[in-house]
Length: 285
Length: 135
Image (cartoon, rainbow over all chains, first blue to last red; front, side, top):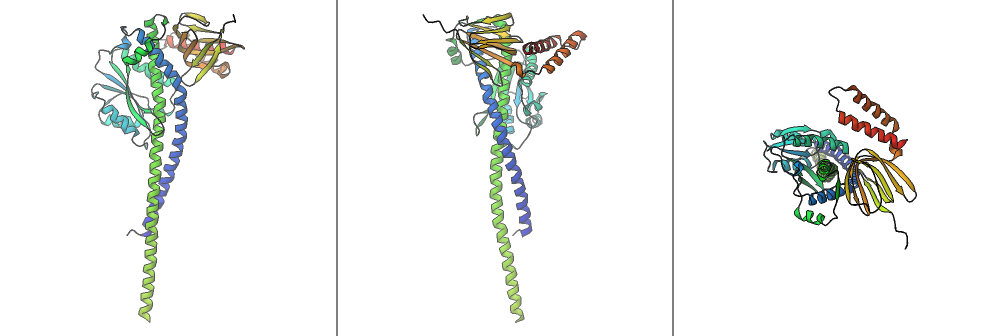
């Protein structure tokens, strides 16, 4: 049996770990609330954006626009959104797994990374990093999103990449987050959605449709990307909150286990001392 | 016959919030083709915005706001702005706008090769709109 002092020391260290995990959980809870609010506030914008773009494309489905067809290049850009910090359960490794299992080969993939943790593990696996915007995730703004999109779109229009994907964690609710891979460009829509949008009134465009698409598609992409950023932040904090919650309760369990062991050891040592005293007294008499 | 209701639904939405939601009888703004005014029952139209001042005429007076980049979707009964940035006059920091204006003008004057003219022009336009709305 471990000595009393060892058990006590072990218990102390677990207790201080528990304090940290508890504090981290509280911090993530607050951050999650904030991120959730932001995600909700930005929702109307994306819904409208999506509606507008679908109805535009419904009318011009057969249009020969560069943003609507894949480029000639084999290369595929993946904008990957993860986190700069660990201790968030499977959050980062799920995103990495999503990218490696996406069916896009290492040679063809060009990663635009956000989040140092995912960057490290993807680099170890031999993926090529095209850009690193890890600082953005600390407080994503629409300007950040549009700057990154501009850069990726530039590569697309120059023909350096043929397709653009977005890998992020979709925030379903506080306890459920889903790693999602989404195709940004060329724009593709479900047939059913297009038909539904088709019932809309006849829309005019000013300037003409093609120019309007030229201007609106980058905005559409930016808005999707910004939405993904905001959701990813919410997911990250949700994941961390869950991870820290279970860490705290595990620590609780270990502490009660150790307390029991400590009390047993203490009782054992008292009993032993008593037996020794009695034995000594008997030997004298 | 009673006078027809001349108000339509107006929404201005930015990525961060629903900037404005209400009923208006007229809205004026600047599109890529120039300044436009929209009443109820306008033909369906989607157009792209350039930095400019949006004037909303409500039942009880006019409201002005600065809008930078985005597009607007006009349907007979409803007008929706999707703007990247929208600000009320009291949200604008005038000294910052003036500094931005001076900076952009400086860049445009310098004519050096590493100046992105289009970008400086947009920055200048934005600053001018901010100052205009404030003044």
